[in-house]
Amino acid sequence: MLCASIVLFKYSNSSSTAFFTSIEDSKSIQDDLNGDGKKDILYVKKDDKNYYIQVNLHDGTSYALDPGSNFPTLGDSLDYWPMKVSTLDVSRNNIKEIFLQSSFHGKPIQHIFLWNEKKYDDIFCSNNNILGFVDSKNNKTPRVISANIYNGEISYNSYIFVKDKLKQFNYNYPANYMGMDIISNFISLVQSFPNESLTLPPYFYHNISGSDLNLLYGTANNSMSYSFEDGSFKDLSWDSNGVPHEVKWSLNFKSTSLSDSKAVKAITFDLLLTKFTNSDGTFTYKITSLNLR
Image (cartoon, rainbow, N blue to C red; front, side, top):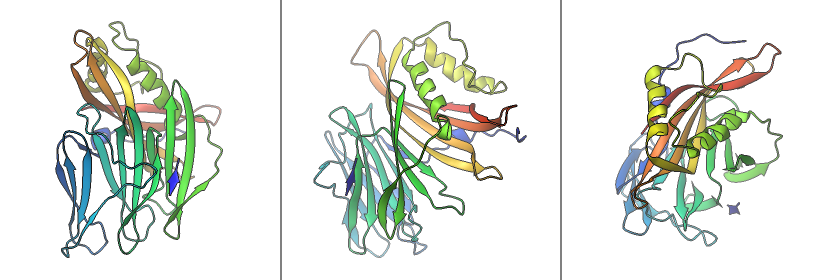
């Protein structure tokens, strides 16, 4: 187990569609997990301390997701830091892997579970706070990115599935990889709130919807402070060279009232980043859509 040139189109509000399911209460998620074309159930139980997950396949068999010995927990049960769950066939073996993000003792944790013909194995765990999927919907080899953003510093680990095992590989990441530089700046921006005189940073698209911006200004003007918890991303479309053109990001924060430190809740910004080509041939990403939930 591993531990550790402007394209013109209509900008849609695809930032509002989450690809991770947030678990505020016990929940059943229906999905075809084993590739037989029938709906299975991923049941997540939440009590006052912990999370428990069970896979109920359509044929009547059930399997618990048991965390490995290195991270012997699926996460603390906290209203202001709920577990996030996603299922995706990154291995391309027609059986979906199960990806989890949660927290343990105030730190982010990640788990990846893989079916091994008899049970689900916890093949990856990490304290990183970013989990991303690259090339999962095109003809390239899908990659899983486990990254960490802290105080403006970004570190990355990249993985691919090889014969149903997760293998790390080295990659020289540019500063604007998947718009990570923009995301780091956006996290710092939100953590600087409240700010009643907010000036819109230049990494926002100039024609972004006014209703989207109202969500941002409303957050800035609240008497609340915000602390980044974790986030995720996934590329949605690509240019003719295979470079991601649109990247969907979800960023989760703990919101705390400045007048009552016990008044806390979870908020999530869903962002759509779009690639624009600069006059010198380089490119940058800009935030073209924003949703708050």
